Structures are given as C-alpha cells and as structure tokens.
Amino acid sequence: MKNIMPGPTLEMEPVEPQSLKKLSLKSLKRSLDLFSRAQGELPPPDPESKTIRTSHKISMEYVGIQPMASQKPPRRAESGALGSGSEGPSNALALTDSKEMQTGGAQNDLVVSPSAPRALNTVGNSDRDTVAVSAPGSSHRFSTSAMMERISSRWPCPDWHAPWKIYRVISGHLGWVRSIAFDPSNRWFCTGSADRTIKIWDVATGTLQLTVTGHIEQIRGLAVSSRHTYMFSAGDDKLVKCWDLEQNKVIHSYHGHLSGVYCLALHPTLDVLLTGGRDSVCRVWDIRSKTQVHALSGHDNTVCSVFTRPTDPQVVTGSHDTTIKFWDLRYVKTMSTLTHHKKSVRAMAQHPREHCFASASADNIKKFNLPRGEFLHNMLSQQKTIINAMAVNEDGVLATGGDNGSMWFWDWKSGHNFQQSQTIVQPGSLDSEAGIYALSYDVTGTRLVSCEADKTIKMWRQDENATPETHPLNFRPPKDIRRF
Image 1 (tube, rainbow, N blue to C red):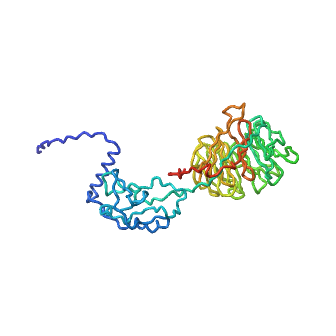
Image 2 (image 1 turned 30 degrees about the horizontal axis):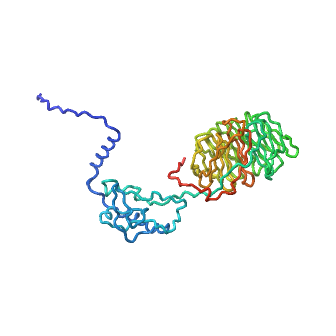
Image 3 (image 1 turned 90 degrees about the vertical axis):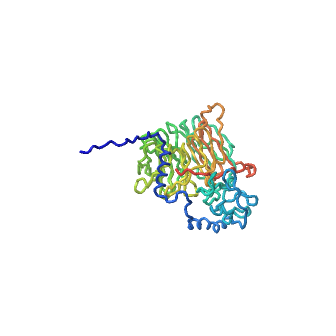
C-alpha cells in the first residue's frame, strides 16, 4: 500500500451570525452573478413599455391633461426629485425616459392644465401632485410610482347636509327608554321603557296621549303595522304581544322564545312578524293565527337586530356572534353569511330607496349591497363606542347613537362624518346614563327621535339657518380604504 501523505488542512472560516435581510441580499447577488451576463450595464430599452407610457397623452387630454409643446429641461433638486421648472406649473407629472433626461428632452412631460376641465376630479386634492422619480445618486433608476398615471381621487364627494340640533326633550318614563316606533300616519309614536310601560306621544306637540301596561320586564322592541290597527311589542319577559289600537289592549300573545326578545320587525307585504332574542333564534310568526311558522336557527349568539324586505333576502339578521345572515323564507335556510365584522352587530339600517344597508358594530360601520351582500366600504371615521341604534332617511343622512351618548351624523353616499354631538343628561341623572338605545326618523325623515338612558326622549331636526358658508364641508378623500 502506498503511503498517503496528509495534505494541508483547510481551516474553515468562522461563520458570523447574519440577519435574514443580509442573507436574502447575498442570495440575490449570487443569483444575479449566475444568470446576468452584464450586471453592470443598463437593461435594454423596452419599446413596448415606452409606447404604453407615452400613449397616455391621448387619454389624458380627455380629462384635462395636455402635453407641453416646449419646456426647459427639468432642473434636478438636491433631494433627487424633478423640479417643476420656472415656466411649468407646480403639479407637473414627470414621465420622461432616462435617455430624455440626459439629453434634456421634455416631449413626454404631461402637465395638468389649470384651466382645463377635470372630469374625474370629484373631490379634488392637489397638495402633493409633484412626483419624485429618482433617488439621490441614481439618475437612471425610476420608482414605480413615477411611471403610474396620477389622477385625483375618484371617491364620491359627499352632499352637504345641514347640522342637526335638539329642539325638544320629553320626560315621562321612569326607566331607560329602550325602543321606539312611528305610526304610519305620522301623527304619533310609541316608546317602550325599562319601567315596563309603553307610552304613546303626539309627534307635533310631544304630549303624552296614552300609557299601556302588560309586560313584566323592560320592552326592547316595538313595531306598528301599516296593514292593520296593531302594535307589537317584545321584551325581556320572553313575551311578544299584539296590541289592538282601537281597544288599547292585548289581543294576542306569542309564546315560544326561551329567553328575552331583543328585536322585532314586520314584513312589508306579508302578515308575518319576525322576532329575535337571546336564544339565538329568529322566529317567524303568523299574525292571524298566533302560531310560529318558522324558526330560523343558525346563529351562535343573541340575535339583536333584524329587518325585512319584500324580495329575497326577505329576512336579514345581525347577531352577537359578529355575523349577518340572509335567510330564505321559502326553504327556511341561510342564503349567505357575512363575516366582515369583528364585534357584535347590534344595529342595522336599510336605506329607504337604495338597495343597500348599513350595519354597526364596535369595530366599524360597514355598508353592504343588496341582494347579494357585497361589501361596499367602511364609514370613513370610527365612533369608537358600542353603537346601539342607527337610522337613515331618504336624504341620505345616517344617524348612529352610541353607548357613551355620542350622536354622529354621516353622509350615506360617501361615508363622511359631517357632525358629531354629545347628548347632555337631564338634571338628576348620572353622567354614565348618557347612552342612546333607540333611534328612528319619522315618516317624512325631517324629525329624528332618540331614546336614551337618562329616561328622556329627545327630538332632533335640521338647523334651518345653516348654509354651506356657515357650516362648510370639510372633506378630504381617503388615501387608502380598508377593504375588510
């Protein structure tokens, strides 16, 4: 056997601990060394991408952006951004190629003409229209934002609404006022309270007309039928009662709920009553026969809000399990489930004209389309409280009442919050009793009634002396919209 001479031993260099970012950069450099033939040279120009960028001149002229005929070469600022020049406007959009920057060509510069009409600008925000296209020390590398078409936001501009103010405070209940419903003739409205009574008030004067008793717990839901002379009430005593308004007494009682009933709604075209409660079930009752027709089960927690429609989905329920369910009454099953909220859905409001609705939760107020339930957008502000009630009128004014006594008014179309107010508790009440439990517009949509924890009923209306000059619309379009 041959003697194998031991060769020189290779000493391994100690491996220093490196961050994940440094290792990623090394891996990228190694890949570039393997696959790039000329890494120090610029990539060859792409004529197709240049054609796409320069073809914006034709489409820009439609929205008021015109190509400049002649302009001085752009002056480079110290920070690396392209200056607008002494002759051009300050909001020029620099879309020049790297060769044109070196030669001083400005044929592809696009500027927004101040006198040209801007068709797509519905809200207008041109504070930062100058685009920085190069970093310090790199004259040939452009960021992606420099090559994108920069136009103003297309978010809809909100309509101007006059601010709302309190013009009447009604005292009469001895407990928290939890529910409200208006008469279809708009002559009176009824309120249910924790003092176990239902009081009927005159809309014009605010005077008490009638007090009826029958429940043994607080009354959480009220509804007045437009097809019959009936009023329906529901409360924590597990009872749903039907009142005859001609005799002012209970004529039917609907038994079936296993716990307190939190909400109720009347179907607009059928003689059907829907109630939801703590037993996580929305029950469908036949008004004529006093029997339960269906039990819509599927929620995992309290059903605290419900509204109905004449077409599918005829029933929409919101629950403390953070979901909203669309129900099919024919087959008694769930059509779809919306899981966009992260907190309990305590209130919902359907627009009287448009096919959409809004739902309120402690995380946000969201707007959905009907009948499929597509998510439209969030409201642009956050009330940051538990929202117990909400209502919307035909003018597109959405009112939301919070657990801390905050009343916010929103523009329905854009989601802009144009007024924030804080209710004042009546003398003798605690500051912690400034909670709003129920909201409702009258039939005309010009009066708003709020039911509160200080045992009062407050009536709101718009300020007749307000104008867009005295109360300007301070609105800025959102930069980024949460799509969840």
